[in-house]
Image (cartoon, rainbow, N blue to C red; front, side):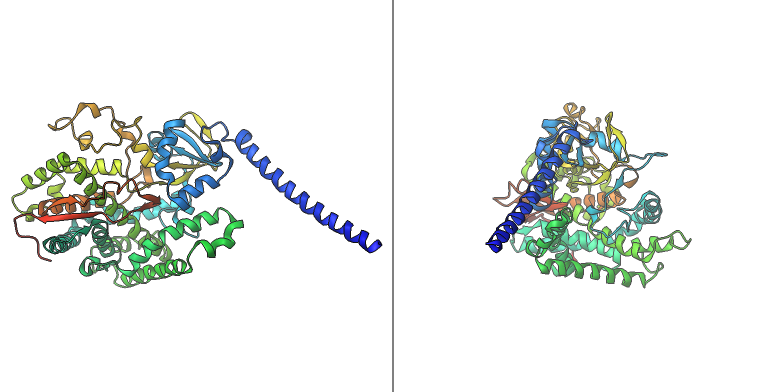
Length: 510
């Protein structure tokens, strides 16, 4: 009997301990929720209560489902320009954030970038660097993106435009349906590979993705899942169930290939070519340059930032042109009437085409390639007159800013005329009230996109040559091409299927 009594007592003690731990855990979690909802420094900011109570809804939608970017439109419509989207994160409309968060802040603490958005082990490279390191690296890289450098690089870019038009012509004459998502990616990755590494990816030549580029696309979703799991250490054991081991291996292989390409280019020195590395190395000799690791990280970052976003914009313009016949007609007429021969189409001449520029701007508005601007961290400052505590994450969702009726008339309609100057005959006064200050597709302030001039030059040249050579028609079943896309830092784009009909003139030979 004593043994039985001891066993019962032991079981009761174990059961009581488990019950206590479970109860304590529940009470602790409830306490956290109550604190976040009613006593947290962000408790007074509007937003869904579920999002304020837990990180899980935001992280799931943003990193696992890829639906959050477009959902922010409704959140801002319901709650206003500042919305609490997570216990320690605010979504701020660009009409406020560009000037109050991203702009130059002399003699004031900077809204620093987070490192999680870049998948880096620390603040290596220009994107997540602290202010002084960023200024040093940007000063070096600015030479590579100057107007003079762009002029010197035009020959490289023109070569790949020639090759793109030639390959598209071959496909068009064969009567094939073309996936422009792939073809524009082939072009932009070849160009940026040439300019960053001195070595293209030969995608246009082979009409296929280079293995490195293919790996890059395959690891984007895996990277989002890794980011999600990093927020919940307790879930890390699930890593091997949620992420294919092959994706992790491809990520490592991708990093190694980028490193090899960079080392190969560095070995050539600064006097052999007119590419990005030439300018970086040439201005890297005063003791204030970049170290080897910074060059590696920045080269890889340039490949991603300088290719996928430009290709996305070109796809977006193609899609919206084919769905708005009047805009398509006006743009093709402007291009075809501006030149007497294809040889006249270059960076300088296309910069004068006002309607082309308006179409590009409207594409960047209605379909912003940067689905989410990487978050900033508040230093403890006021936004729109409200104090935002130090350490709060600030996100700008350009999709929401650009699709807000507070900022733009007819926000969901493709209307290039909103960006035309008043003197242009197609300018419409009804769009004069648009909040153009909220339109910053390349971000704003001292950390805005360093390659925006290159992006505009590439897009103008490609679109002008593309529409000079071809008539374009969207294949049936593509009308929801944008609507069905999810965003994992970049859009998970499906094929954009079109048919091209060559115009009656000689196409460029590759």
